[in-house]
Length: 456
Image (cartoon, rainbow, N blue to C red):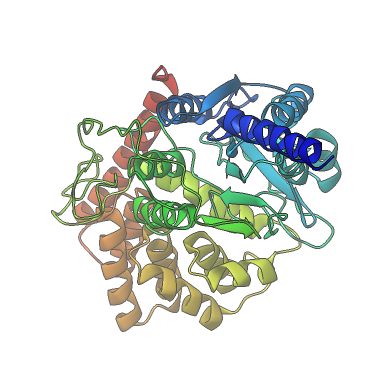
């Protein structure tokens, strides 16, 4: 009897070892890119393809899905949960639109009505992030990772006001929800903030995906360090406008995505910095020409159309009713430049329904001190309203900096300032001409990015 028991025990051990060997090291990923909305996004499909290629190089079995609707996304996630059962690492990557409804987060697949993002519409049309995380959790993978390069900012705007839910919280962006147990959720932007879809004419990927691809080149990085590097790179690439975050749901932060295989060292694209003292990260070019006259060497120059897009987001935050002051203050305290500027100009100029110039200027000063040209321009406007000689002089310095950084509207403010200070008509006319030419360059840049075919 004892021999039979030992034999059975040996067979159980061998079976268990064989089963573990069959699944040991299994790495599988579901990669989704949604771009074909009524107002298409530029880069999610590019991002999904680039991530799929990179993960394959790192030994992942990859299921790639692009431009899928809600039913297709839910089916893909459910089937992936089964396929990933017992895997070493199961990873889901999503690029596209997303939003929050109350405290819950949703991705918005193809077919969602992006012009009517009420809480009810988001819940009805979206796929809950909690559902995607739950499918990952049910896979039983040793490492379950959900990467959301979502809440993408639309690149060409139509003028729709950003809606708010019953609590006055803007519905775009993701809420600050923690990951469930056993799952890592990486967000491309901070709570309530939008993620940039575009950051450089030399890149066909979003800043977050671009930074993630770069960070994945380094073998042996635990996920805590990997996502820390990604956050640092994105902050640099977007001048601190976008700040990624990650939530470890009681799981190991020591898991490694790049075990040392498939390391790629890509050739730097023209106009893209590599090995520049920032750990090889790609970043906006210093002193590059964007059509803004007389850009000074060493000045951080933004693509003008990107600044216009960011300004649109700021204006929509200000226009939301009720004004989401509490949410903006929470974001502003983390250094979020969009929140700092929207809050400062909203209450400083009175566009938010309250007018507190002193408090507004304090918020704007924080963003302007970090060389954010949109904030510099709005702060200059409030100083021009004050009208005293010292304020007008300071406004001129701020507008010079903003225009040098590639923000075309700053030239129009310089025209107004020239008239207020009695400058020669020729100088005022030159500023107006610079504003017009700069805006034309911005529109040309936007059209070029939209017309350029995505890289395969």
